[in-house]
Length: 258
Length: 347
Image 1 (tube, rainbow over the protein chains, first blue to last red):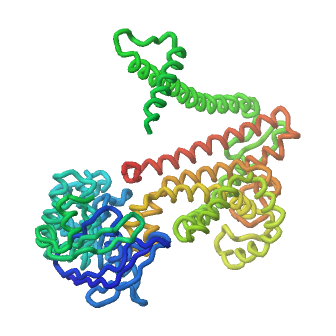
Image 2 (cartoon, rainbow over the protein chains, first blue to last red; image 1 turned 60 degrees about the vertical axis):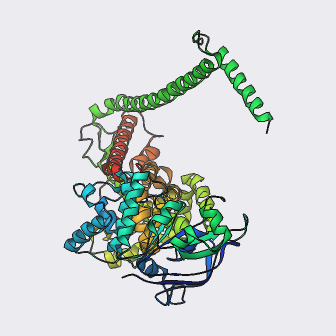
Image 3 (cartoon, chains in turn blue, green; image 1 turned 90 degrees about the horizontal axis):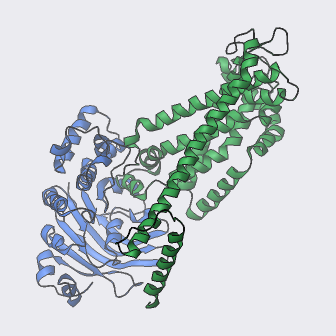
């Protein structure tokens, strides 16, 4: 179920603007990898290249290689739609479909895959909502609109929606930045639980969060505005936060910069 | 930067001075700091003016509708009481005969059918145009096309009507014959001969309402939050699946409203329809046969030479159009309201 990701020589553009340059890193299976760094350093961009969501924006393109268990996501024969069914994503702001009920939100991805059997769908809804620690709170109102839940519940609903299709990798783009501390804690607990099944990559501005939930950490930075972001250091989280090799990493994690 | 606080303080002072003279009956209460109370009065007055303005506008609109309805009823009663036929079921239109006998059945049928067929043709095409512009077209083409569609929507519909009449209608014979040949087993498309039929009128109407429905639908689809579109794509949706699960459901109420505006135009259109249809007063299920009339076209055709009972009869048919339009709009509102909590307006 979980998968290794190899990124080599990755450069991402928005039109003519080079957002991030020459990123090389390897994400281990069933691990939580955190991307940290100042705003504009390209960490979200790199995340979005891992399921080919980067190129959804007009003019955006990618150079380099991203291998998912050896298979190039940007190979000539690779369909981005299939990539996104293998690599799930949770966004910064909770974005359940407002026109769908809680139940319909969870099965949205399954329906795209052609699953129609009611019994199977019911089973997967419960499984996914339990997986996202939301089942107990919503089991009596699965037919209610997903947009009627609180922010933290909506985000867990989005996680349930993402894991319902049983992806191999789960990408999370600042999943807690719009949530209060209690909801944040709930999501962090959930991440720790999910890593037994999925390879997880999380972008976060919250350094405590990175040190709490992740096994490895990638620190991105940029020289000055307008320059492309670069990967500065990539190592075990414990090393990044206690004894980083690079001076810039140390400055950032100790709060002396940005 | 140092001058900024000064200038804004000046401006605040000026605003305070201006409003202090405006409402003399509402002086600032004594005791409180002058600036604060002046600010309060300013907000209160503006709110009050705006509230009354909007209320007047809203009530005015209701009053206008009521006045129109009353006018129609008053002017129609004389003719209706002289009528010897049942106004709703009679197909004939002889208001000047003695005794007068007329009914709205044929023209109402023509109005509803031509508008409905026009909607069936126009709305899918308009939604398709709007989706192409907002989802499929590359950015530069998209803004260019959006501009063009807005421009087309601003052209008076009679211009399209005349184009449809003079350019399109003469070429409709082939299509009508084809429909008759291959779908003639459906009574709707069965016809002894084809010609200036309700179907041609419907196509002309469809062309007239297409730009407005497309332009409004485009606006609606532009409002779909990027977050919802990305959510669908990230689940592995193709572009069409993204449209199906994120764009169309979110845009549905807006598309319905846009269609209602188009429907209103289609039902009320007079000249183009009056020019196309032979103005016969009979209900025919055969769409392609040269026959049919609509309420609006009948009024346009008959008003000039009508008097007395004739005008009253036409006004009575106008009242029916008025009521039908309201019923259709109420139904549309009900459809939109049915799943309001799932409409996305809460998000």
